[in-house]
Amino acid sequence: MLKVENINVYYGQIHAIKDVSFEVKPGEIVSLIGANGAGKSTILKTISGLLRSKTGHITFKGEDISKTEAYKLVPKGLAHVPEGRRIFLQMTVKENLEMGAYTKGEDMEKDIESVYSHFPRLKERQNQIAGTLSGGEQQMLAMGRAMMSHPDLLILDEPSMGLAPILVQGIFDIIKEFHKMGTTILLVEQNAEMALSIADRAYVLESGRIVLTGTGAELKASDAIKKAYLGGA
Amino acid sequence: MSFLSNFISGLSLGSIYALIALGYTMVYGIAKMLNFAHGDVIMVGAFTVIVVVNSLGLPGVVGILASVLICVLMGVTIERIAYKPLRSSPPLSVLITAIGVSYFLQSLALLIFGSTQKSFPKVFTVAPVHLGELTIKGESIETLAVTTVIMVGLTLFINKTKMGKAMRAVSEDREAAELMGISVNRTITVTFAIGSALAAVAGLFFGATYGFIGPYSGAMPGIKAFVAAVFGGIGSIPGAMLGGILLGIIENLAKAYISTELSDAIVFGVLVLVLLVKPTGLLGKKINEKV
Ligand SMILES: Nc1ncnc2c1ncn2[C@@H]1O[C@H](COP(=O)(O)OP(=O)(O)O)[C@@H](O)[C@H]1O
Ligand SMILES: [Mg+2]
Image (cartoon, rainbow over all chains, first blue to last red; front, side, top):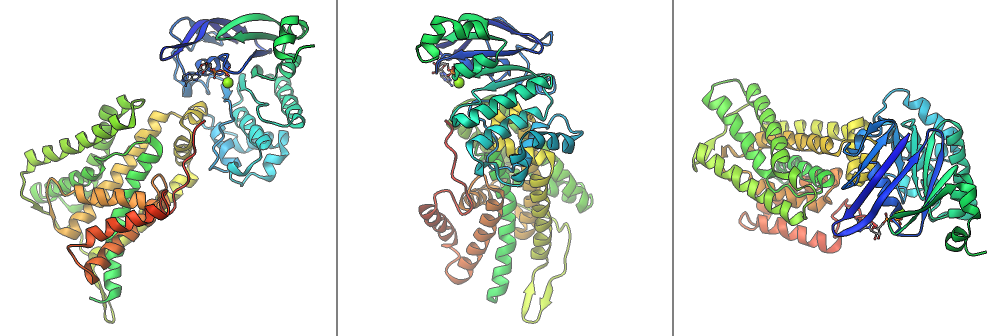
């Protein structure tokens, strides 16, 4: 589905991503975990065309997308829920969902209803300005908005950030639901515990480099991971 | 003249400012730049009408259509050539470029048309309306009628159409809009096209109201419209409409009851006062700090 080969990304002089390669196969849930500042968001932005790698290739469904403009990737089947949700705060809930289907056009009402079936709260608030939603509702909206384009690959950047534990569980349940519907998922999290429990495979990122990889269960059991990301024990 | 007729000509002048201010505010909201060459588009539009109607002898309608077409093409071309390469440059570079474009257009007009003002043709004639004591000028009626239709149309476009919503999305969060599949470049092009078309229409009414056009005729209405946009809250479409209309009314009343010479000083003084009390302008929203 997605193949990242040997990318190097810079912010001016700062070398943020160093020789990173990884792969997401069709139907998988793959997690990328790492501390704050490790480079997780930078990798995701490079995949979706907001940043460019100086080297290597990114292939999506067999096509080289390393130089493709960001807005052209949505119709190809890639959706990216950015860190901090980035919903359009001054637009209504429904308008936000419409923007998610910007490149699609047909069956909009049906897709909106389908998002509402996953998130009944959003339906109750459909004509409300998105800025008035709570943090959890905003995350639901960001995820629903991304699903409006029927992506083959859904990229999620820290969906649990800033949410109460009870809401985090809800968000992960929804990720599983989307996955069951046939969506491949690339999940970035600081919440390693949750991310590893739903991942088929995971990669651990440290200072811009991938330092460890394995199945979700393997990494969860590994001592190094326990120490660094799962609070000792 | 009675208060009411002063008020109505102020309203009409203000709606011309509002048309120009809309271009300023939309470009600011979506492309995040101050297009200081925007006022000169009015001048180019008005000269186009003069050439088509006076020199070529074609009907006024052709002049209007040609003026809108040329301004749109020019606005879009300026954006492509001068502003697009600076998309990720510091705002100051873009501002200086815009001022450069403004001088360029003025000098070009000076070369082609010379420095003496040209008389603006009577494109259409609307008979003045008499309501008892009150007389409303034909120009005021046509200006108010057309600008009302344009403002209602633009509001519907922005709020109801797919392109309009995409413009709002880009103005709020460019990166997130791109992640929705919206082409930011195309959206900016459309914004410049709309702003320039509005400026062409404004040029038409401006020419009809003042009767003469020279190479620098766009500068003052351009600055006033910028003031109107800031007054209403830059980036806000209803703000530009309100700001423009209020500015026109204040200017005309100041001319009638205080002093013609001081009217501009009063207009700018009001702006300073409003910004002291409400720095974001009348309808401006607080600018979200990006994290
Ligand atoms: N816009 C930027 N300009 C300069 N440096 C940046 C920028 N964004 C991120 N960085 C730096 O790149 C590194 C990786 O950041 P990021 O990808 O956001 O990490 P993560 O998502 O894992 O927390 C950090 O050291 C961060 O300071
Ligand atoms: Mg991050």
